Amino acid sequence: MLIAFGSLANEKSNRKSWMYYFFQATVGTGLFTCDSTQWKDRRKLFAPCFQSNMLKGYLTVFNEHSHKFVKHLMKETENEFTIVDEPISLSTLDIVCECVMGVKLSELENKGAQYVQSLHRYVTETDEVIQERKQRYLNGEKGDDSIKYKSLLEVLLKLHIEDQALDEKGVRQEVDTFIIAVGSN
Image 1 (cartoon, rainbow, N blue to C red):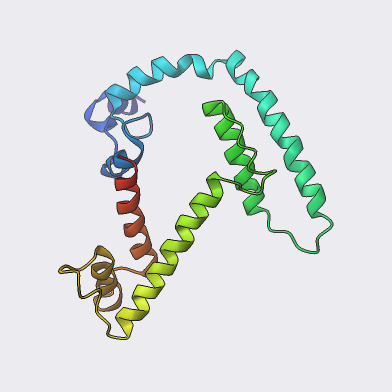
Image 2: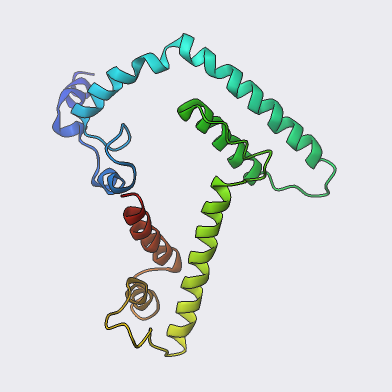
């Protein structure tokens, strides 16, 4: 018990793993990524948000969205087969956005209207570009001759196809990392 307490009290042992710092480019230094000193200060600031009376207020949001979710599932029982991961994700997004930002998205009712469709469009277009460039690479075609450098994607595809240092998922993750890091500034 004393060893555990001593370890928790030690500032060095409370540092986040290097992986958390990777996310700072996207989400900044919030509770998820900040160091233990800043986390303690921020946690004190946020403590009122997690008091029972505040959390009870969220119950109305949870209940409202739970009823909408059940209604949605009831309609789905008419179908022979239903995939529930999308409605669960949309409902979760609705709840989180309303509780965290006070914004009603209504993504479940609108079947992923704006926010989710934008994200889906990004994912689809990125996948298409990666597959097209991969096919061109496999066919021996070089990139655009007017460009005097290799794109990051060309380098990643070489690492994937020739060196086998990355799998296709790794290529996608690295592309996403750079796009999100730049897009979040």
